Image (cartoon, rainbow, N blue to C red; front, side, top):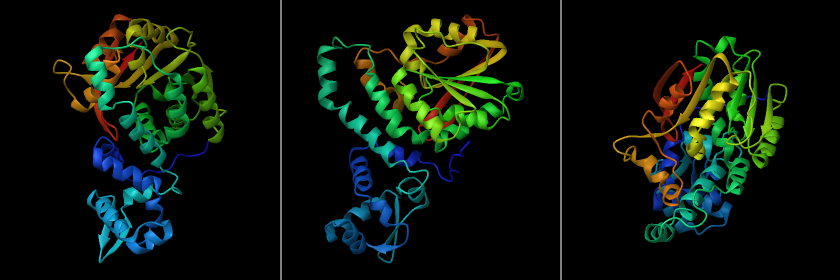
Length: 338
């Protein structure tokens, strides 16, 4: 299996800029102009302007802003990338995330505009309330899934590898697994374990492409379907649901019951998600990120303990939960054992 890049830095700082109006615009402009490609070595602003056919004076002003955001360093009038920018913002880097950052920024700008929010606040959800456009997930999976192998997949694999059940695991399911990088990372940490990535048919086609690209076809297969309605298979020792149960909240008992039935005795279900506390007001970033969906009529926010309680109701004999820091922010993890 083709190895994932070895990640040296966190990209959480860059990600947080996307939620800021001016900083987000500066970041995306730099990405689209390939500014970081010119700055692997210290150079003057005029050299960058000449290479990219930009206005010389404005180029220096722009690079000053990037330096102010700690994306560049400036010494004696020369600019160079920080280590973080070299790793994630240079197009030739195996950990390049520019496309991902632009895609997220477009989502914040286009799908959460003040005009849309004002209309929803005044009139409420429309006829499409509660529906997710599959085409958005297809485009995101194809264009922006690289972020998964730039830290998150490795971290998830490390958590799974630390489970006492891990050495005895033979087969796993990544539910709503998208590109399949989480499944690939987990099975590659085990000598013999195989994995199945389950996602909607259009997304599953892309999953197969990535699995083929990473030479993982002998360890990871793909199953296409809608897990809220279709069978997910059985005989699993691990089922992973990373950030997908939000979109199936109204079916939560049914889905977790299906997960329970799909596990072997002693099998493990691990859900990665965010939970709300303080009467659904914390963490603030999470509440704001999901506000547009919620205003559109989609109930997607889990309150503290909701998933673990549903696990117990569905028959899991034990659960435990903890929170980790990720590049996307705090992440809640619930683990249930059958």
